[in-house]
Length: 128
Image 1 (spheres, one colour):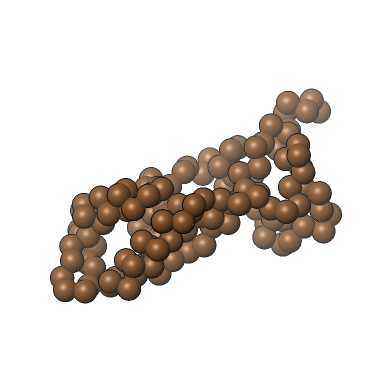
Image 2 (tube, rainbow, N blue to C red):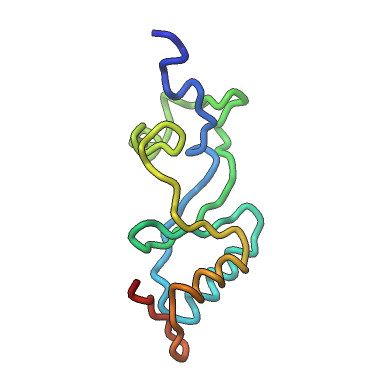
């Protein structure tokens, strides 16, 4: 098989260049302040998926990523890496990027203003 036909051979290793962690729903002032604190850090994005779930992405390379985007510990890589399916790969798969990605506080606040209403210290998602 030609190297061009193996999907991972042209990969830029996106899955090895970020750590994504789920966040609790935005419901109160404390949740908002946590998101505000996260977004003002370098190499950190906040995302909201199609279901309205919140995620934080830390952009940082895996210490085992080789200079040609290969895994230097492939045979001993963590289980989460083994379980990563090609069809969920951002580069090669059918998975789509998040519909909402925030890289700064202004983008975060614009989203919250549009999609949430604030009642006291509570945040309530608008029904769209």
